[in-house]
Image 1 (spheres, rainbow, N blue to C red):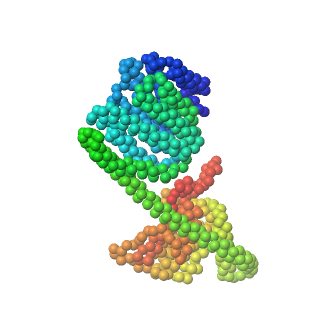
Image 2 (cartoon, rainbow, N blue to C red):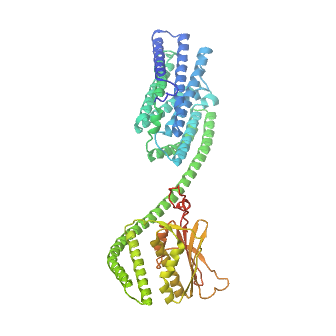
Length: 594
């Protein structure tokens, strides 16, 4: 869809183009065949007002249909056109309605000079490239610095001959010279934007370049004719100016703003560096301009004093802007330094994780091979234990044979878990009774705690809900933790190990507590709670299993030698009969674990 599709259809746009072409043709015919007269002057002035107003109206919809910096770009273009149009209306008011020549020392000349400044600002925005937030802030400040410098330059060079010491020849010469420099800067900016952009933006900048070039050339020739008293409104010298004004509407109607907004290029740091350098050059130029203001012997003392005072004021204001920019730059450098440190720390952490993953992969291959080799003798042992149970044995022998069979089956399950770990395949999970797992672990560890003459007490919550998990892996965790508690009691002294379960909120808790043989001294720090780290007791393996079950483990140690290991697992609530959703509790799917 056309950029003006919301406002105009194809037929209306063609009519608009036709009206522009007819207006330019009428102006050319009038310049060729009509003599200098008030009618020709009025027609030419009104045509220029209409063409500039048409261009302003044509560019306004582009701003409403754009976003962010692109919208600001079009609004600055419109602002420049509005200043240009207002100056042309002022000129027309004098020549047509008042029928007088525009005064030589006219305050509205500043409007003509300043109408190019918003265009230069629009080019500095560079909406065709992507920029981060910091670059946008610093870039705006850099350009504000250049804007202040342009205002300062106009007041320094032109206005003293208008308000301090009136001098028409000096005023006209300085105004024309500075205006020519401003147009050259705009042309260079358009040329650079033309060759550094792509797609719709490239075509836009190319069109604006040729329009500005045509207007600049026409105004230069017109000024030359004015100096020789050969210019009058409506003459052939106005044809290039009117053609440039008419092309504004043509450019706006042909620009597809939707495509232009979507063709954002990658930002280049070279541009930002040169904008900052230009800002610094503008600041340093104040000293040279102050020297020029003092040493200009052709200027009266009042003008030199005015220029010197103006330069000091501009130096103060621009110095404050440079200070603000430096503070912004310092904050950004500190932020980038912290970001680089964080990135380096994350890189080191990632390298450690990759190394650990490689180690686990190697261990998995080794464990997988060993587990397969163990399967054959375990199968044979299981067969012989079953065969032994079918023979005539004494009651005591029968008990021993059953324990052998139970241990062999437990070993076979552990080997199956090792193979599953080696294959990196998650085991199937089913609802389990944590009390049953704890009782089985206590029973299997009975020879160990009886040999150490340690009393094992159980405190199970009979109303404990079920948890979701793999029975072999969770039984392995229970055995490992009970073994850790027994080991702590044998090393530090003590004869009571308590295995308990309870429920808190949506969590099932299994706790193994190794009580000390003696009471702690008064005032001693009894416990400290920390997340379990890898140690020689194999708790790291339990932590890995529990993470797969959406649980975690905590360890509490006291100065008296006490040890408390607490396992927390999410409760799995029975799903309604009509529900087919997963039984994994949503609360624990999003819960952060240590």
